[in-house]
Image 1 (cartoon, helix red, strand yellow):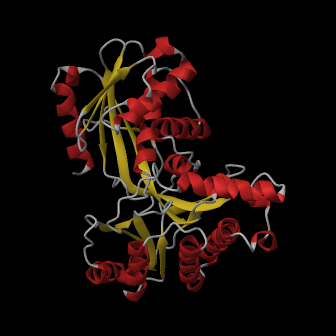
Image 2 (tube, helix red, strand yellow; image 1 turned 180 degrees about the horizontal axis):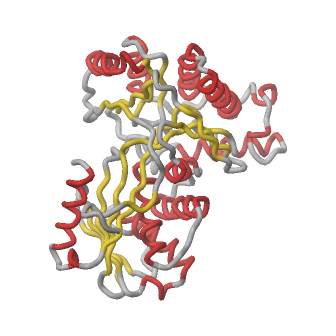
Length: 385
């Protein structure tokens, strides 16, 4: 469903109870694919994601006093939570409503309960595949925070919005994530990846050359961080830093971590991110593939977050003619990202799908992604705001 069709369906959903006639505002937040740099953000390291042309769209209008109600065009069930943020996010059903409750609590904590007391109606539509490692939940929470903040008269800069969206996601899932996904969704720039320093939060655009294409394919294994070993991995890296007497592994050198596989991954991955960004800047395409493959090997062998399906998909991409490929996101399932010559990208994707096949664990989606602009308000389909 394209953006216009989604907006029309959202209007229809609101109109079902008479709210469609009320003035609406529209907010969009893109998902992201991380080209390189995973499990480095929470160690104040470097990452290189790009905001992609898959997004979450939220329509908001006035609703019933004291309530925030939400519906999704793609997911079942309706959400109805207290506008004062008093509902415990992790107890909300359906489960996607936990992100709504988390965002409501975060915003009301910032603006006071009275600001949202008049009530809000929301309709949500997303084209970011869930369980893919492409930040569907972060796109949702960024869009929700933007919509609710405006409704509450709260003015947030990009960093505050990112932190608020992360807080909402942690409330919803209990998973202690980093800020990469939210910052990328907010700072996205068309045709550019973003080199993010997760210590200073400085964001540097890196142009993606026109002769390169970024390809994504789902392994068929759904990825969910809640219930995975994500929190354990983070704790292990924090413990490794503490044993070295430093705050984070950002400040460790290769010789200090050579005997600790988890820490070794973080330190070596930071170096690969900077080398990959430099290769993009200088047009050194020959360096990109080996860096992607080294990143995947490190995530597989040192950090132990890959799966047999992800490994097979990386091999399929390379055999099909990609320069290189790696798992993207936190691992434990989800997607592989590959970089290929733009002139042969379609053939590479077709050959990869044919070679990989369809695993029994779930459906597989394969697509080319482009870098897009970051989250913010969008125009109503009828041309108004």
